[in-house]
Image 1: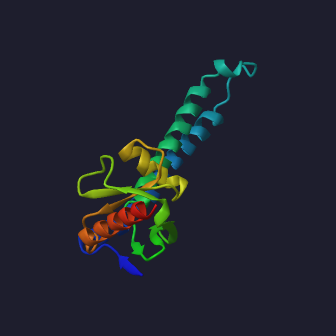
Image 2: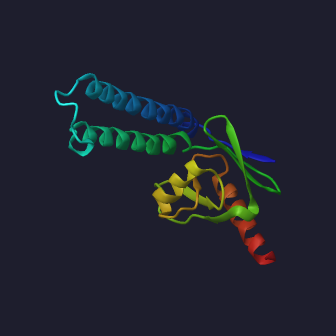
Image 3: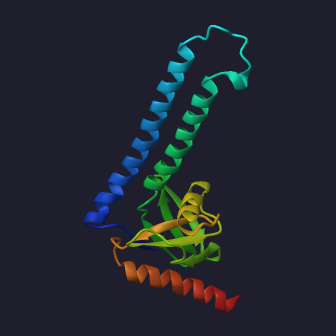
Length: 174
């Protein structure tokens, strides 16, 4: 099993980005919670207001939207720089800091599709995790889950070529 991890500045980003993702989620959820506590703390004079006429409904919807976008942004940062392992059965990526996900070669769809950020390559698969659909949707407008490989990973070119060769070999034998 060959391991590919980030070195140098990529390693610093691999540490900072997951912490930043957790910070984004926690911070914006706290903001939403403070707003919700604030609006429910104040009582309305007329308790018989119809729910759609209640002025708090708009604020509640906005706080739910803030919470949704905080998860979206946070998950992008948390899983941005995965460590990758390759073997004969497939690849394994680190996810959610200490968790690993196996992706069989039969589930890897393509490499380099979409429009990922500069200096990164998008790898899409049939199954990774629901959170990885954020990458597929953000950078290839597809519901297939994906993950990014940054150029700062050790042996970047060898890793990308190995994944492409495995996909090509699988397609030739199918």
